[in-house]
Amino acid sequence: MKPRVLTVANQKGGVGKTTTAINLGTALAAIGENVLLVDLDPQGNASTGLGVGLGQRLKSSFDVLIGEETLANAAIATDVPRVSIVPATMDLLGAELTLATQKDRTQRLKMAIEALAVAPASAQFSYILIDCPPSLNLLTINALAASDGVLVPLQCEFFALEGLSQLLKTVEQVRVSVNPVLEIYGVVLTMFDPRNNLANQVIRDARQFLGSKVFETVIPRNVRVSEAPSFGKPALLYDLKCAGSQAYLKLASEVIQRERLLQAAE
Image 1 (tube, helix red, strand yellow):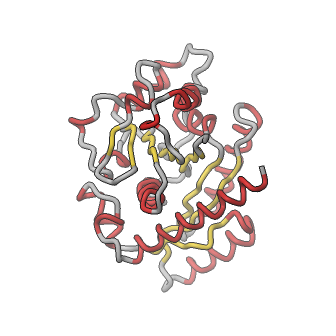
Image 2 (cartoon, helix red, strand yellow):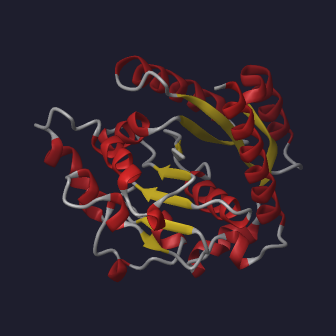
């Protein structure tokens, strides 16, 4: 079965993008899915957050983009059962320059994902989550070109919806020019603080603006979730019972439910 490929993206930084990619991937794995996380951010925070140190990143997403490695060969099994990652290195900073003269430069990741179809059974995944840098560059365009949809973490704070409108324009541009099947898969409200009246207003505005695209699950601002990456663990392994971990499990259930509806409609 073809994997569902989702880019976790927001042009605004600090919205919980990498945290969502790591913990949603872990939560999907916890309910039986095989997940591949592709780290396309030169900072490599998703790799670090899953306990993959610099010394283990002998093959990276950069090697995949320049055609020197396949996704199957570059993927590393993590300490999370059923979760693998293609790690990132600082080499990604030079990807744009390296690929500048290549006609297929926006399609490199898409071709690599398509090649997984002939990979060994051990390299088959039901979900591929792509963590992008918080900017619109060749890395992000590669992710969007390879994806079925975009999963947007939306911080429950001022200016959040303004950033979202910019992202929606970007998605539309990529859909028209590069990937006609691309759509907004869903919006995840993150860093919610119930004591903040503005946060509640952002939730109301987002639901009014995007309707059913907004997941019912809201990810709370949670200290344990923030601490987990420094231990090289997803929040679900660091503290399963904390509010943040429980929220990501609920989000994974929503994603599975949404997937069933999409498959029924196809």
